[in-house]
Image (tube, rainbow over all chains, first blue to last red; front, side):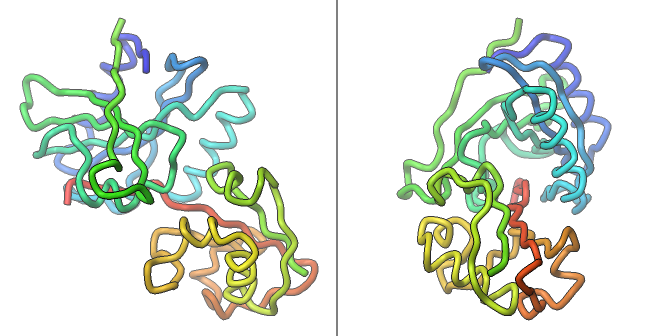
Length: 136
Length: 92
């Protein structure tokens, strides 16, 4: 996945803005390059869980579709843990095509952004595959 | 027969269809029929116990079925059932 510095900064700013709760949103793109960062509401609103508001989810997915873009990634933040999918992240990864991007604020001064393809139906040990994030 | 709207994430499981017509007089029966016809859908939206996954949202004529009668919500021939898996997860 390729994102611009400004888009990476937007992801980090969203994560910091929602702290101590997790943030969530979508990244639209074309040919593997991000075109837009679309913040959404975490309906759960807790430091340990995100559930995207379902109406916003529908609207944003339609918006991406209408614009002729792809749903490149679903992002959320980990406020106190590493930028790596948790058991919950894998268990609730219904979407096989978009990447799951995690913004970690574990080190507040050095936020990390990593991307993963998740397959909750795959065998244990084969559910998480990291994909490179190129920031340019 | 009710119309079930299939989101992009589940289309591969139904051979690429955007909508599928299935029988049943309640939302639960309609989804049961859908999963019987397309077992791959069941693998995505049902738990190991065969229950509808807590994080799968279902809308009957655009209304959240949880605010209706959930799986007992009556559906008729003219009704549309839409499945929308949640985007969810978290550090724990």
